[in-house]
Length: 178
Image (cartoon, rainbow, N blue to C red):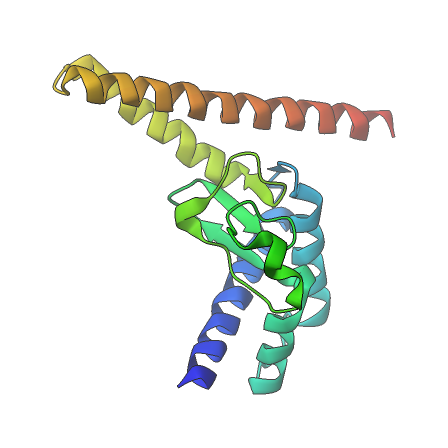
């Protein structure tokens, strides 16, 4: 049974990295502390595995490669480029030095984690979420505590969008200088 789960994990990882490579090739931008690791993982996957048959051995190698541990989290509007040694979601981070591979705990995702990257697609989804919050606020149907919490969440999401846009502007300026 565990072998089937490992294969499923490998297939999901392959799908995530394939989509990442396609979006980057189409010009999608990436921001966040792990943006370079995200781009490198997509490039390494494309160079090594794209267009090939992924059998059991290849899937095991894919799952075992620490540079390719990329997990999309649509609810958090981010991608985790998981490194168990630096992951703030791991409560046993200090004990993760046993060499075992761990997956991220999406229920404990921390906004200051060094493993986070965000794509233009995720920022587009964030913008839609901010619009939804604005529409709910305009309708005035939420009780005061929930409305207040939603406005705090909107401020947090807006800050993420601004950081992404600022990093993209800075990256564009660097590219233009070259």
